Image 1 (cartoon, rainbow, N blue to C red):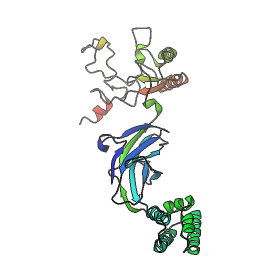
Image 2: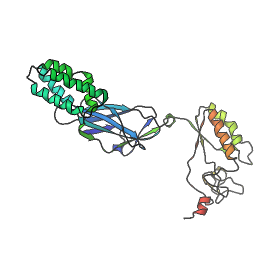
Image 3: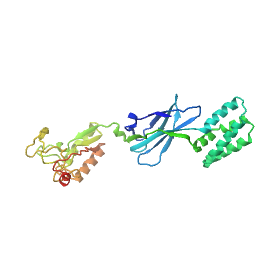
Image 4: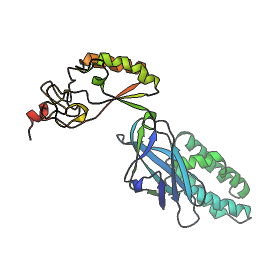
Length: 314
């Protein structure tokens, strides 16, 4: 049984969140009937990948297990917990108790040899060498139970068996849980919202990108590290708002930058009054040299004058 997996937001309905290179600590309650020894692991992958990576979990107390994986990229990850019965470790635990108690364990030893021989079929490389050597030593010490216990109790034998053996009774926690991995700035940053056209000294016209650049050092000096630009696209003409957010604007009213689109273009264009694409690129480069990362308002709304509305009235 695998229960109470964390992190899990509202039972997995929403993704948990971490930063790049921040360890994601996963815990779960894991148990089964009987006294067999169980193992557990975290399975995780980027959502776009096909294969899972694995991080082993270790028991804490009272059936609680813990493991950790570290996301290395931004984006979405999937993860879950799986658990299984370790037949070799379970046999070894019983074998150790019986040998220590002075019991006759010849049949138990034969059972262990058969179990290791089965694992040998899937073992590779160094693990195969370790397990094959273990079987050979066990056969030589068939009636020397304490010696046999020393042979099978070596850490490298347990490690090879754990790595190579079939995962008996394997169970996965479902559904897959999701993790959103962001840059550190997604956790904390200081945002300055800027109206480019309001940064000039001539009230008869909007400021340009080049003029607004003069304000950037002061913004950086205040401790901001993200420069949040209101929409920089052409502004609709129909029903333009007036100054100070008046519903009805007079002649020459600049309008709201969130009423996007006119004959100069839409979301893929820049308001000519602010400058050109080259001016925008220069503005962005200047901001970055001051430690300000530009962010654009993702505004979807359109003016009736937007080219997309004109071309696709439906």
